[in-house]
Amino acid sequence: MLPAYGNRAKWELLVWLAAFLIIYGLALWFDGHEALDALFRSHEEYDLDEVFTALNVAGSLGLIYSILRIKDMSKEIQRRLAAEEHVDWIACHDPLTELPNRRFLESVVSRGSSLAVGAKYAVYSIDLDGFKKINDLLGHEKGDLALKVIAQRLLGLFADDKVFRLGGDEFIVVIERNNNPELTTLGRRVVSAICKPILIEGASIELGASVGFARVPEDCESLREAIRYSDSAMYAAKKAGRNCVQGFRPEMQEELVRKLRMEADLKVAMKRNEIRPFYQPLVDLRTREIIGYEALARWERETGEFVPPSEFIPLAENAGLIVQLTDQLFRIACRDALGWPAHTILSFNLSPLQLNDRLLRLRIIKVLEEVGLPVHRLELEVTEGALIADPETARDVLNELSQEGIKIALDDFGTGFSSLSQLSNYPFDKIKIDKSFVATFEESNKQGKVVRAIISLGSGLGVKITAEGIEEEGQLRLLQDLGCDIGQGFLLGRPQPVDQTIKASQTGDPMAGTALRRI
Image (cartoon, rainbow, N blue to C red; front, side, top):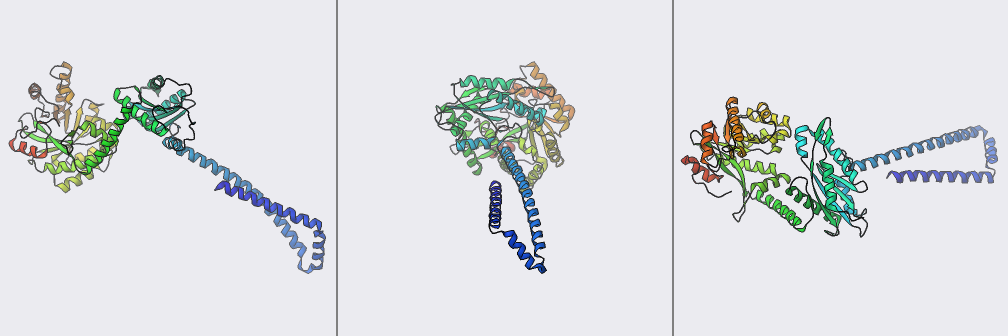
């Protein structure tokens, strides 16, 4: 709009100048000045000459004013055009690294204007390994600085090509294969560049990278497909291990299609309540009585086949469904717990995202009140990793829950970071020894010392200790001798539906009614 308006003003100025020249020419032709003088003299009583002089002066001043305003308008138009260009740049570039962003990439894909017809291209999908740990341990400022360094390194490798940051720690590179470069070797150069230590404010930061690539036209016919295929190759590289490079193969796309289909099935399963909590007994190791159950998500298809939690839980997290799924399971678990003896607790796992929700206490209390489950019968489990993402918010949320009378358990103790710091800064009522320690502490002297130290630590702090993953009688006896409070594992009871937990609670036998299926 602004350029059109500026052009119109210029045309109007030209029209007025043309009119002036025409009138001036006619005045010369017809001796207009002499005619006006005669008119003024013949009507001296009206002071026409003075009026005419005033009009001339006003017209001259108006012309000068108009010229000045046109100059100002031209400057304003240029300023606004520059501002619009800046806004367009911001909209199409990542403000942190100044690389083109997803929107810019989409415009390139949609237009296809930057791709020469018949040329060969390759698309690299790059995902950083270990970046989340840097944010968690060193803070987001250090993480941002690391991303800037990575962006500069990629630009150093692909100076004449397109490097895009899609968000987070994901990058895309589009190259034209003029000299038929060896793509796997080039991918390894990307990994090598990213893996070099990054020095930021005296701290040495090391990252890895998973790289996948796809070719046009060998693997696909369009840039859009190449981006999707390179993404599939990148996920395959991630599965293969740290710092891997993978070229696209057709079976990778099949895996991606399977993943998308499973995500769609997950949404349907959530609507149909096919994902339900199963319950694994928590047993008092002194009395062998069941004191509670931990709720574990289980997805049973209509065919009777179980989908492993290791598949659908990460899928729900990546699809942004984990909070909805957790809320849904929590409500069901609270209702199921009403059928257990009054002293039996419900242990429920919180996702890391929920610890960032300052309204979590209100939502949990609301569900407990609606269902009718007493607050003291609920125990919430959190992992150390969930605390690191936003320690201050997590501390506030857990303090609020603890003040309501809800017990808090620290799960997978010893597998995260700064474990002793977590114990002193958060209101934990229970520590759960990770099953990786329990599985080996009989044979490994070091692991045995760790387990003994955790149990002693719990006794000194006045918190209960739960040992996970008890599968052998020898493990059980040794934990009892060491003074461990609570046990959990296949030896004491497998995860089971709610009706079987009721049977087990009535008989006092953790294995009563247990289906010996591996679920």
